[in-house]
Image 1: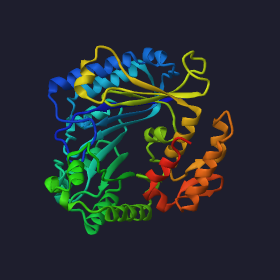
Image 2 (image 1 turned 45 degrees about the vertical axis):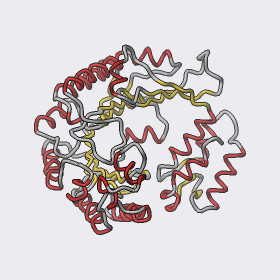
Image 3 (image 1 turned 120 degrees about the vertical axis):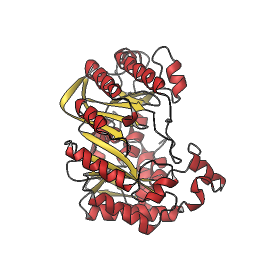
Image 4 (image 1 turned 180 degrees about the horizontal axis):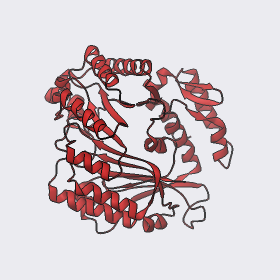
Length: 398
């Protein structure tokens, strides 16, 4: 089974107020030290997989360079990363190769680098087409810059493009949100991601919202009901435009679904490299340290840049995924997809019948109008998508 490769690039030109990722603004010297370290981890990946009792595949059919903002790297640094991937793995000819970029970072030199590296898909963090909203969260681009970058990418032959939007930004109204969604549709990109603003203590804006303050324009953030309405509007407008929803936050024209992200939602094996990068590989069934019920191994790198760079060898936190935990994952990941979860497949993947608790949860969530069964598949209802975290939580610790 071919792997997906994820490479974390935790560098940005500036830190957005809503960002809760392990990323920030760092020196060029640290960037090179980081790239060297990630390449060293790739060279050590077979040994790490062996030591953790995981099945190690060399065929790769998706690569995703995410961030942060990978397009802030010096041109030779992405080339070094991709060369390291190709030295350690067999990248299949039709592999999907995605790089995340911020509008305003796509110079002619950067685009030429992407092409040399074999990139065939670009994901742009636009967040909004309304300049007041992007300024409020410390984004460094505006609508005009975004549209100019789209033109440059297409002129270079990179037409497989995703644009991100965020519902719930400061100063956002229903009118301005409709404008952003319609601008995305008018751009004719084949893929869109629509996220709801996360409110937690891992971002400056989130902390200010929790505290009830006014910094970072927190007092201009729409309330939860408004934001949920914005999400519903996006679903309707994108669907009407032929950009169909296939996952809670993702929409695509036919044939342009993100193959890499589908690996996460369908529990296909993937390897992550760099700060806060996560991996999941199938477990070797005869590993002496594993109980018979082990299905997979999950492991992750340090979530702090200084700690990651200070390590002299590859170090990961790891855990076994039992058959029971795999069932939980299949539910809360698979239900993210509009196609839902096939009940027959759930039974085939297990070595024992589905537990009674599983059927009880399905019955309860269905009666509450959050889940439905159709042609042998369990699917979230429209209301269930808005309350998806509540649904997913019911399938934990079955």
